[in-house]
Image 1 (cartoon, rainbow, N blue to C red):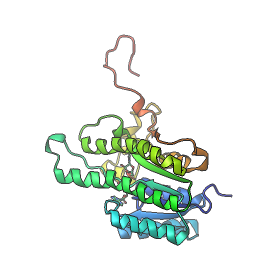
Image 2 (image 1 turned 90 degrees about the vertical axis):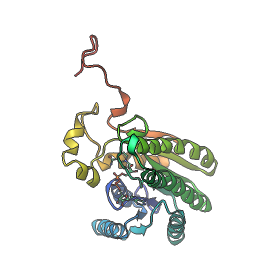
Image 3 (image 1 turned 90 degrees about the horizontal axis):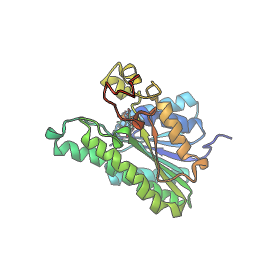
Image 4 (image 1 turned 180 degrees about the vertical axis):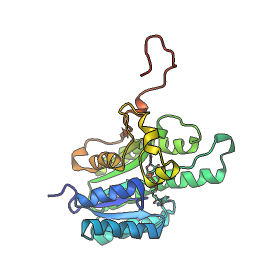
Length: 264
Ligand SMILES: NC(=O)c1ccc[n+]([C@@H]2O[C@H](COP(=O)([O-])OP(=O)(O)OC[C@H]3O[C@@H](n4cnc5c(N)ncnc54)[C@H](O)[C@@H]3O)[C@@H](O)[C@H]2O)c1
């Protein structure tokens, strides 16, 4: 018996990157998956590719912008109605836009918060309604980041959204606990994806040096944590953010010439 057999799973922002990898892992584990992306062609192609790989029809494209709450509610309602409920929702869709604080624009701020905060919040709300209608239990997993825990230059607005998501996991866990729904977040560290490789072709080599375990996360590393939090075994874990960063956020830099604590 596969661990997610017959479970209905929604993953947002899944045409590429971490979300796409999550859809693969959930579908391989037996789930029926709604693969959402704002780009309809990307969503359709990604779903088709996964079904081809699996030699089964398990992944269904759901194109909508998570910042468009009406479209989001319609998509979640359609999936749950068509396949008989919703068991897991991963609010993965998120955008990263860089910019120094002094010249950051209101338009960039509005779009960033609309996708990362409003999108995640109302994905969780729509999912919770479907889970409660199906008489639970349910699992909601949000995507936070190392940038939600520690400050990074040129990522002030992004960091605020990712810190907000850690608090979102706590506050929603409190309200949804009585319905048998857990809400947790994964705090992803630097992860090798199509996007990060596009930003920096040497991404892996450049990031391998900074975490105590001397490696850069793969999509599978993040997926392993998400699938655990989405599993029945994680029923007593809620409101938490699980950092998946090779230990990058456990330490603070020391001065180069510390007398007792030499740098490696
Ligand atoms: N990749 C990393 O290193 C990293 C690190 C920490 C946290 N994260 C977080 O993990 C999540 C996934 O990151 P990623 O790097 O895989 O993403 P990505 O930038 O590769 O985007 C994945 C998909 O999301 C889609 N998308 C963008 N806006 C959307 C919207 N409004 N509605 C629906 N879909 C939308 C894009 O079209 C894209 O196909 C994000 O929330 C991100 O903040 C990523």
